[in-house]
Image (tube, one colour):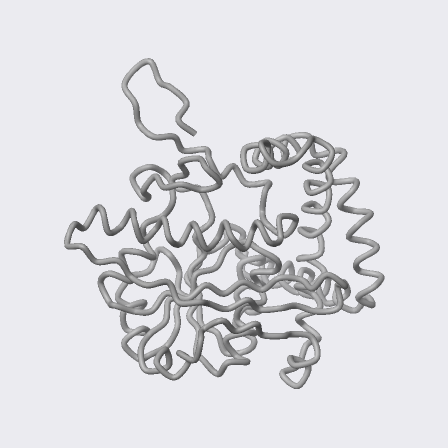
Length: 305
């Protein structure tokens, strides 16, 4: 089995390497074509994306505009695959050519370097590139993630995510590793934009609807006092590169009421996510059932989503 997994890993690695060898303009054209086909034939994910977009923008946009965003979402998700392969060819000396940092920390960078930082991000733009921004800002990053079930694919993405110095912490691992990293004044990257079960989250507003959101980030921030800073790596309009939108730091609310603090801080994190998604609506992961978990209510159940 180990030998088979190793062979499969090599095939996956070669596949992504070849994808990354394509000129970027050609990769965009192919992503557009494949995205159109995916949107047309994957009925289930098309329905999820359109349903989510209607929940979020139904009062602001017409059907044609919403469908246009959905089509671009499918293209941009295909682009993530090409860009994953492109990263295999990337060198640190290329960073300044392809990445710009839009820093809105208002002069607090030195303060942040004196303590641990919790990086709030989500599946916006190309989230796989976030470790590159940590390398550019000379901040050791630990990415909190859920390992993939398929071993060869997990090995490939783990290797790709750590190429430029980032470290991985499995969500199954002890929180002690997170606390130790923050104590060393390093950063921990957490994606907070996915649906979770009711026992793992709190219900807070997201695009005007209650969404079950992990309270993990708020819990760790309250426990450690680490700064929470949003970082999103989005594609530039011309497709030539990326901009890292950083900050501002999200102030921590501490009232002494633990449950209330979890909810109010998580709401602030959702607000930051919603703001960047509104700026770049076609660069978010709308094919995910974000409002799947619903608030508990006694029988008969009612839809509070």
